[in-house]
Length: 534
Image (cartoon, rainbow, N blue to C red):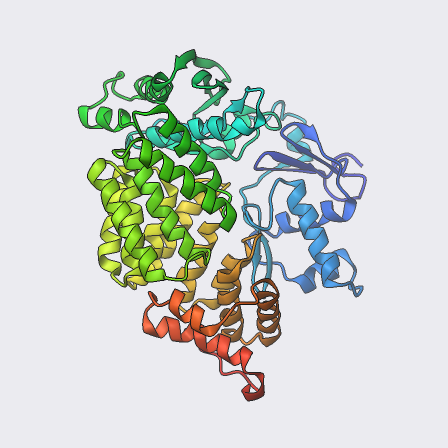
């Protein structure tokens, strides 16, 4: 019949994110490329879209897609994983399909619906307008053109530093596109997904202390190249490339005919170091730090220490050294937490003394104050860092967490979500902060949802999950998390957890430890759990 699909259902096209579902031929296209999809996975996506205004339970999915047949949880989970993969989502990201703990699932992305009748006069699908306001730009990962694949840290670091410099300008909206692979997704699609007008892409060829950098600034709507440049510099001149790129782009996108105010020009001209070799060690240390492992952290420490030896006036190198001391506490790499906090204080203060616009230094100092049980002074430092760089979603999330610790729960969680939504490819630790904030506010179901969005569970997340599950009365999941905790970290102990979480308010620390004690001390567990409610 005209206007109906082969399945007998009305012909519909659902357009969301960068994909289109077409019930006429059971097809899914993403970025204009057809992606094969199993019928049951297709039906799952369509059903979630058609019911996107509410949460769909697992029981409902069983009834609708499996006709009430008994299937294992793994079968449902597998279909959901395939559905997310088909639309470019993941269990970590959950920007399209969100898991609502103990309730079900909900399609949360925006959807345009085109009926079979409308499609006859549809023509080409119009690109939705980008959000208005400040000029907006995304900086993508630079391609490494060097013969040595080990030089990827240098090309990544150049892009990250350019993004950081641009983000210091309040009149620009700057987003990182480091997670995108331009070889797999078009630049205009990246601009649309990140909701920016312009995209900066480039490549780096590094030979010893010489670097050749190629950059293109593209209009994300028309695809037109607005500016293109090639830099070929030696030694210290390589460091200047970042500043020239940032200054030129700011002038081109500036709303006041390219006039840059003196204070903002000073921010753009701030250099991480004046020494090329120190600069190289800083980029290499940043690369290792992002791996978030004990081994990589030690390599990062060595790089930052070497950078300080070469340039003791580098504000950035001192800031990163402070962060090494903070991260070694998170990773359990220190036997003396108080000493690590003290070293973080020293390095962060040196960073601020060396550079008045050291957002990393203020951020590290804020975290050190938190660990030293001085949340209010820590919060003041985070606000200073965010004032220096208003485009930094990391700082939005951190400030939100601090607000929750200061009993500004609703405002804090809203700000954390703002940081998460700022960039759809946010790092996992955003969900860690969201989980901690919800735990602090006794919102245990929401805390569990946040922690489970982290694909890589570690000692800290498993510790909180044990206590959260106890609080919601799910003893089986609590025991499973405890078992995984001991399997992965056999040195786990209550004493160590108590010390590493001593910065928490007493009532929150007690809540955390009581849940763990209950699961550990099985012989004294009551038949029914006494659940602590908000």
